[in-house]
Structures are given as C-alpha cells and as structure tokens.
Image (tube, rainbow, N blue to C red; front, side, top):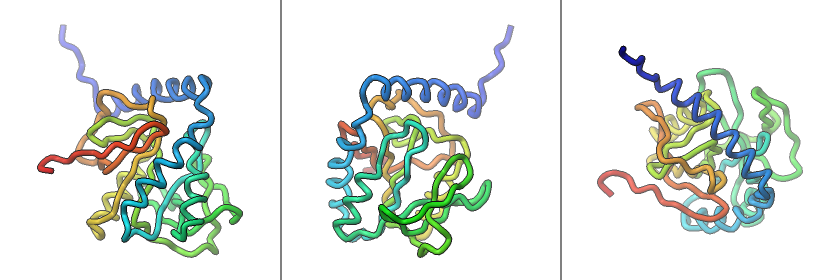
Length: 202
C-alpha cells in the first residue's frame, strides 16, 4: 500500500500547530520577561550595522515575544523605528514610522499598525516575528507569506538589507519546511543567543 506524500503546506500546517503549543508552554513556564532579556541582544546586533538608520519591528500578537522595549531603546538612540502594515492579501507589507506613544489602528489578523498619517518608511533592518526557526535561517510564520514577499521585494532593491528573525530560544526546530518561495533571514535573535546564519559559499 503506497503512502500519499505529505505536501509542503501540510507540513507547515502541522508544524504551526505544534509550534503554537510549544510557545504557549514557554510563556506559561515563565518566559514572560523574555522581551526584556531580548532587548540587549537586539540592540547589540543592530549597533553592528553602522550604516543602518531605519529599523522595522513588530508589536506582539498573543504570546509572541515582546519586542517593544527594544524598539523604544533603538528610537532613543536616534534610529527611525517603524511597523509593518498589511495592505491586502498576497501583497508585500508596507512600513510606516512609529514610536512609543504614537497612535495605532487595528489591522487584519489582529495586527496593529501606525495611522495613515504616519510617514512612510523603507527599513534597512527588518525584525521578523516567527513561530519556529531552524539554523539555516528559515522561519515559520502565520501562513500568509507576507514577510517572504516583503523580504524578497526589499532585497531585490537593496542587497544590504538585513533580515533578523525574532523569537524565543525554545522555538528552534531541526528543520522548517521550505521551498523557493521562502526567504531565509540573515540572523536569529532570541532572549539567549544571537545567531548568524551562514549562507552557502560564505
């Protein structure tokens, strides 16, 4: 009896379920202060890229790791901070400037984004949320493909763009299912580590 091959979409769907359960467990197990511990690692890495002045982050959905303290400190250091905006399905994200205290609007998928009056921003560094990651730089997201499309578009115009996956250290897995549409990040930062992704040929 032959077995039906598991599709990439099915692999991702299955991993997404287990990754969400794992993240719930990490937070329930006392990782709620991980955002604070994450901040020093994010700041230290961003400071390595002296030519970068605009950093896009994200505000947590559910029990995602809290990046907001790092965004606040980056803004205090003179960098322009911004957040992504979902324009429509199957389209890249756009970015608008945002700092602590600025207004927010509700977006699709329980996201929050800067008001339409906020200035447009093209980031040099993109801090990317994840559900799971592997050491080849592939990440599992919510399934909309927004960041893959966005990173591909940004990197086609700016080869120096830096993509940094952000998550709990316990979200690492052996392998994230990926194909040619998935864009690997350049670094992973957790509350415990800063991981440089070594590309083939480096």
